[in-house]
Length: 292
Image (cartoon, rainbow, N blue to C red; front, side, top):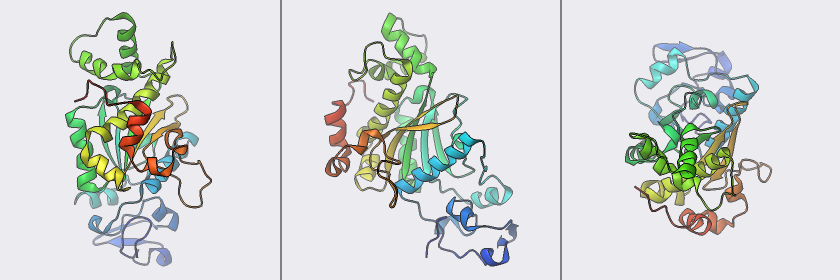
């Protein structure tokens, strides 16, 4: 029987004795709540199974809520976790975010060692190395959720907006970043004189869609229902993570309708939700001509 923490091994009487041991290592008591939140370090990584995309999103969402409320638990950051991970890793989330120093995913979502496979570039701009890294997480670890993480007041998106307005491009390789963000800044779906944060949301959505459009490994996993690709907009001031795109319905059973869903998928028929390439083509048009 597989427990919520993902391992099929028993907790070695942890619930009855109030302590656990793994080989020569021991640690504090594990509660049922610990098991549900993924803090159990009992058992081999090879015995673990990944959560569903909806379960993975719930864990991320719950962690962000704790961060916002100032009650972060800082899970999986002790010596026993470090020892366990010396033999390998099994992250449940792949997070592709902006390189901004205020956007530390493990802190924002109250995660620990081995929980997230994190890829970062300025403005969360896609390139071959990014796609390869994301595909590695899906192929090697069967990571059930891929998050594109943008944030308000993004400097890279602001630079792209300024370039679109003035025609002046920044120097060096920064120009390459700006050129790849421009399609989001000038998207026809944006209203005239859109705020830069609306552009960031649009860029986050378009980036999430391009990952699936440009990677057959990811698109096949999405079509099978094994992986969800989501876009999240982070608010720097209050720390909230806002879901702005999802490739599938992330509502768990017995959850009120709409909770956990993105506005992108909540109103789409099920037959369309299950075909992300069709959703992208009908909603946003063909892939950008500047693609990789």
